[in-house]
Every structure is written in C-alpha cells, then in structure tokens.
Amino acid sequence: MKSVSFLGAGSWGTALAILCAGNGHKVTIWSKIQSEIDMLRENREHVERLPGVKLPDSIVIEDDLERACTGQDILVWSVASPYVRSTAQLAKPYIKEGQIIVNVGKGIEEGTLMTLCEVLADELPMADPAVLSGPSHAEEVSKAMPTTVVVGAKTKKTAMFVQDVFMGNNFRVYTSPDMMGIELGGSLKNVIALAAGILDGMGLGDNTKAALMTRGILEISRLGMELGGKMETFFGLSGIGDLIVTCTSSHSRNHNCGYLLGRGKTLEEAKNEIRQVVEGVNCAKAAMALANKHHVTMPIVEQINAILFENKSADQAMKELLDRDKVSEYKSLTW
Image 1: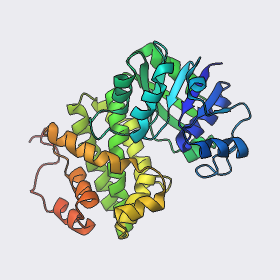
Image 2: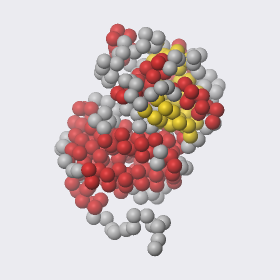
Image 3: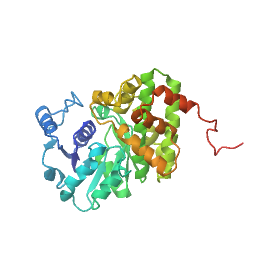
Image 4: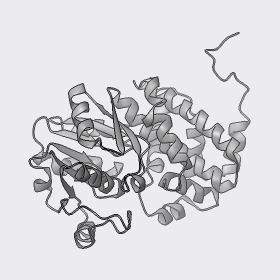
C-alpha cells in the first residue's frame, strides 16, 4: 500500500482518487476551495461533477496543504492548468527532495509556453515530475469502465513505480520516456476538439470531422516533434487516442464548448454554460505562439484562434481552410 495525495478535487482528480483507493492505497484529496471540501465531506461524492459516484470511506478529505503533502509516496497535481504554478508555490515548503509528482492536467502555460511538468520543475526543482495522460474521461474512470493511459517520467524506475500504483483491473497503464510528447499531445488535442465541436454545432458531417481529426493530429505531431516529442507518441494513447475521445464524446468540455460556438454562442456565453475550465481555449493562444516561434505551419490552430479571439465566423474559417493552395498530402512521398 502506498500513500497518494491529490492536490485538486475536480472530476479528474476525484476519479483517479477513487481508482487509487480501489487499488488498496491510502488516498488523500486536498482542495483550496472550502465549498468543495465541505461538499466532499458531507456527501462523500462530487455532486457537481460526478453525481452518484460515492467516495470510498477510506479517502481522507483534507483542507490543510501541509498535511496533504507530508509523508506521501506520490503527489498528484490535479488542478486545472492555470493553477498549476500557483499551487506549486503554495506547496513548495512541504515538498521533500525526490518527491514524485504526477501531473494529470493538460495544458500549456500561456505566458511562458511551458508544459505543466516544466512548470512544476521550474517551481519545484527538488521534485521528480511525471505525467499521466491518455483517452480517459473522468465520468467513465470513476465507474471503472476499461481505460488505458500512458505515464511518462525522466527515469524508467519512476515510470514503473507510478504504473504500479495506478494500474488496476480496468485501468491499464503503459510507460514511456517521452514526457514532452505525452504532454503536448494531451494539451494540443483540446484545440482540435474545440474545432470538432464547432463542426458538430454547424451541423456538418462525419467526412468533415474525419478530415479535421486526421489533419489535426498532423499539426499536433508537426509541432510536437519540433519541440522534441516522438512521432510514436503522437500516434499512441496520448496523441491520436486522446484526440479521438475528446473530439467525439459528449463528456468533453472542449467539444461541448466548440459545439456551443458552432451554434452561434459567443465564447463567454459558451464558457459560462460549460461552467468548467475549457483547457482548449487557454491552450489555443499558447499553441499559436509556439507555432510562430518555431516556424511550424498549423492552419487549423490558426483558424481556431481567429474564431475564439478575432470574431471570425466558423463559416469563413472553414472556407479559408478549404481554399488554401493545392499540395501533396505528404511531401516526403515521391513518384
């Protein structure tokens, strides 16, 4: 039995906490939001995000950050991407040398263009960061539906340790050394998922979405490999796997936000209706900045930014994507 503490009590952190408790580990959930702490203590379920899914009696709900961080084999960073750095700053006095920290959030910090593990390493240089990602909706994991993910770490030892803690009968965990690829795949797919939702909101068909997802993973891998990620990763669980589930599921807040945009809602109206952090919106600007910095062509990401932040219509964005110059599908293939 290992001690695992989750910093952040949203749907994903709560679902993984239930999983780890079911695997026989000693589990703590911490939140900075007192109303969230009170709800979990009083109801033993996340009424807002995972209604009807009860927390095991063994899970401790903690409002003291020092107690939540002390004596843990693994700290799981399960806060939304905009709060990863601030949470690390709060927790820093309680982080021991070599502490394994597993980031399960998905995003790129807009100001620094760092991945979330890079943010953690920046704020907590004494720690041993890892990332867990893949096609894994909290709503399904909390109900023990079969799911597969991948964990990336700097060392095989850390990756296998995390694998052992999280792996269960219905939750298969693979390992990988490609932390950068895993993080970028999990982050950038949210931008493409917004586009998929927009297409659905516009009433377009399967052909259109298939084209979007295929060209979308190409854009993700193009930027990802420029930043050091590996092609295999982008065509694995944290790349194409996560892209498929996020672009096609009603559980996806990114897809659902895009759907509302496609139906004519403004970004603020859509975000207010979703009532959760829509990571793809935060990531879209960062993705475009990275593409410009590294001279990578990402026409879908460019058009999504125009829709989100420049009031371009989805119809006009679609027209511009389809009207680009004629090219070969892959320049590397020759006659």
